[in-house]
Image (cartoon, rainbow, N blue to C red; front, side):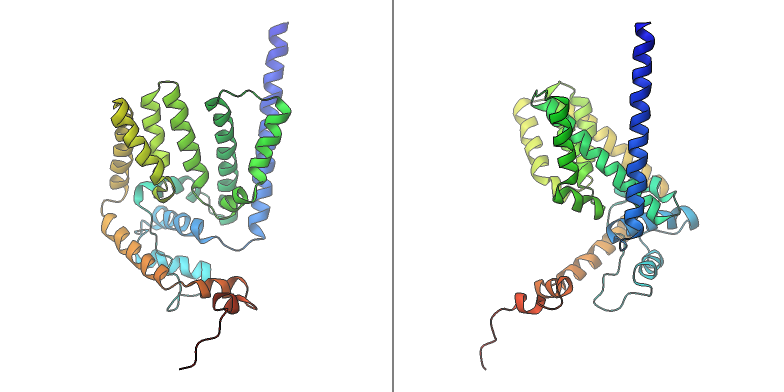
Length: 283
């Protein structure tokens, strides 16, 4: 009898979780339908769809033009972001499951939902990492606050890889704490999704393994990374040079972006004055 009661409780918890996650996905999809297109998600998502639908190089000019037409409604003009895919093919694999969905807004809504779940999982792992067992109410308040924090919200709507990177970082630390170095190495692959965010942590882990001689961590890391790279070459063997070309084009565009231009775009009425508050000196 006691076992049946426990089974019903587990079933109830699973049902509630499904309803909550489904509600999150529905709400996020509605939100994206009333928001502007987010190019940080659109470009890799559409690049993956271009590859799956037509077998076309996602780093090609044709794929970039497709993204430009969707984003701008026309081809990009001089000075505009060319929207070429500038993430490595192993990272692009991360977007392929979402590219199987032909509705951008639904795919983006599911991306946001999974990113929110990743951040919640990061919160739970943080509790475990510091051996803290707060009450259910305290835990719920903290996790809801984590989701609704303005910087978390920005990560979600900008389709940032940050939540996955943070999950990887905390997951690595928890695995190291539990002496699961092989799992820690595998989770380092998540950390590498956005090296610009995780570079200090990567450097820390390198020095830590040198000090502790726990080289097993890197065996797990190399197995996962080598498998991912091999799979990316099987899907698209010649991705390296087009990827580098798009990175250079993206860097050239970023070099043309100025503080004044950004402020003027954000606040047209006062942007120029904020960017250049002092009058130019007479010649």
